[in-house]
Length: 383
Image (cartoon, rainbow, N blue to C red):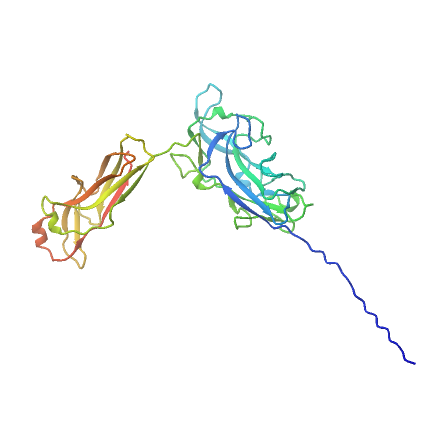
């Protein structure tokens, strides 16, 4: 009798959960040429004075952003003093004083243009929406930063102290020296994780529960400079942190160049009272006023230690040849500042640079060859 062997085959089916993690990235758009204005951006009350600093544009590959926050914000949180001309009462005089301003984040979790959520930057970290776990579905998600004279999260509220009218219009206000805040955006890895769970009190991120958002290709703490140095608008000191209140005055500037980098001429053309033109100085007045006379100061020098200008042999060594330098017909004394006045805006102001007064006898006693000199021109504004 044939036996039939039964073979049992077990197929085990297991379900492996696929976890989808949102990749969140951002771009930071810093404002340029920042000025203080009344009721900036979403702020509606005329007592509020401030300026927009920049905007985070945050995107997610899944369309969801979990419990976003601003971290490492210590250098930009709490009171930020602005110094400038202001008064203490409505009819008081404008005097140099200091007033506290605050950086407030303005987020649009329901899409740009919807009712925003405001948060004042305090301590080392601050939720963008709430300390509780929350999910933002706006994609992209816009978060603006403003510097204002209020710490109210009600965008329609009035400033509690020193309304906008107490600050002198058309004047600069300076930030603390070296003020250059950097901080980061952070998000939770789960929709059920709140801000306090994935961050620390020092403002860092517990990367087991959250992550720093890669902003402009950079990740980690303090990865985003909030102010572009080019945004400073103090016309008297444009390299120092500070903003102008009102329309920034246009300051005239001067574009100065020379027609050619170097010139060659026969020494005999500059003997005695003869003059030979070696270059042309050109000045354009930028942002000037038509009909106004402007001036610049020119100081000419060369590499020789003598009090006069001198040509030296290009090859080998030998005694120099003395010469005089002229700006048009004005004799230039080496190392002395000469004022070029009567500069006009809207035209090309030009003057010839000339050489003369070379002694023929002195040249005849020199070794034949090529002689050269490098003339340096220092240009400054008159006092």
